[in-house]
Image (cartoon, rainbow, N blue to C red; front, side, top):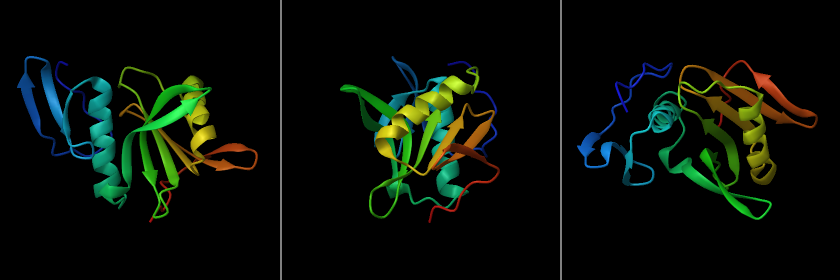
Length: 148
């Protein structure tokens, strides 16, 4: 990855290193080094923002949350779980060059049909969209919900 783009999230204190695989970033929640892709850059900043700015306890964040769709294994990028371990928020991260459109919302909604989180968050690091699941579908939100 070239110079990472400036995102809408505050600067995050990330641990980076260079290896034969390229630039890597430390993932605190998964406790491992990951290749620093554009999508991972967004995910690392989103997780830091959830913890530092939104008060989400780090222990409540699950990355690469397993989701089975029609018997096929899939993974939700970031899931915030409640004290009862039930998903509260499902976040779908895309690389900055990927437009957040209806297909991204549809992808997150498919995952959420299995998980049942109350909130969806979609971001490419340049834009952020929030939705609340209602009886009639997903309603856009203007502000981040209070989760804890």
